[in-house]
Length: 407
Image (cartoon, rainbow, N blue to C red):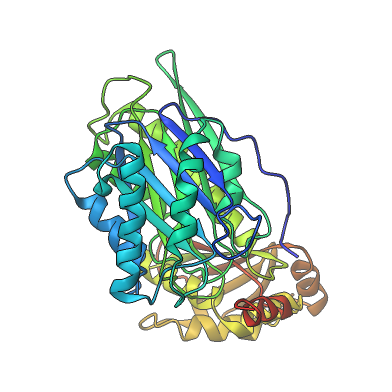
């Protein structure tokens, strides 16, 4: 059962974006599995992609189209099939999807970015996608974000999305985004798939800097199982429909307000992915401070967050603090003085000076581990740099979901 289940909040339309979702029957009948985003002409688009060397065919094509000279008009997203591990044939199918959509809509194929998610290693069926494109184009609507949040789901138990609005000099700007992902999550760039848009006018290079910064502090700080997907992508469009003076610098007040809104939304979406992690029963924050460098604090946070022994102890609500110490010790921090390290779960100090804290009791630890939301706080005692990673526990349901994934 996923942690903190709730309804999708209202998703505000973004002027300059229309969205449609249909059931194409790519893997299952009568299940929404094909989504189309239409972007206003001259929209700026920023993107981050998986660093997995076995990146999926749509990642190759989307990245090439995004880096080209042609403006991006459409994002085409399918679920039920990742089109990964399919070689040149898979790339040809992804290109054909773009070409067919382009022919129907009067744009070039290079104006379409394709995205896929689902089972790896299976050929993507072209026919049901092509046959569904007319219905997609006909059903485009500015109110289509919520349906799209459901249409991009795979093993997710619920849709994930949100909106933010800011005011500046009497004008209101909107940011809306959706994401999917539940397992195979240690993004190393973004999440499985995330689509965000704003009606602000932002220069492409400034928009890219905004997305990079927001991804680094949100989607790059989550892990369910330590696996980086072949299909990860996060894209952000700025349609310019608000007709504000173009944001051309990262130093202005409007940029700062938009950065805060996009960053807050990305963090919320990233945490939603963890709350919906496959088989997750607990939402866990690993907060590491006292590092000599931010990189070593993050290394320690990930070592703890991805330790199967720590995660199974979290699942059992067992305050097995020795497993946390072991993970910290193997994180590769040079010349770590273990006597300077302190570990707490919530408000309960568990370990200090290289051993169990003097006033700690197992009853205190069990109480701190009993809730659905747990915060593990680690102080390395060697500096002032910090990092935070969000993760889940690891239990029987994760194994069942992934054992049965292809059935």
